[in-house]
Length: 130
Image (tube, rainbow, N blue to C red; front, side):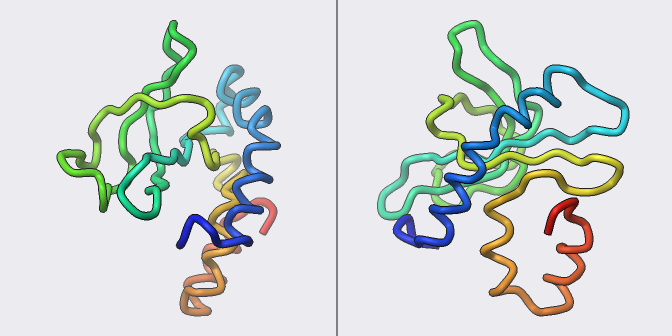
């Protein structure tokens, strides 16, 4: 999606506004809350690339490090599983699993309308708040 997509930008704003929910769960891990991931913006030529990152770690510098949970498309030399560092301002979404349901994932919702109906319905069913 283009960086100027209003619906996606609104989803990013909602995700950023609720980021404390992610950090509260991340910092007080519970057996029923797993797979904490952040979606992070990386600057590229043209549209920025927003990509899900796993194994998130807070660094002493106040920045973060995590591993690419997807294959980057526009980040030469970066691959699935590679470690990358980023700042809080680059976080565009968050999610974790609670009792098998996706919590967060605001930027997933605008993408549902472009998916085949059966796929979108299956993904909605996996979301705690579709």
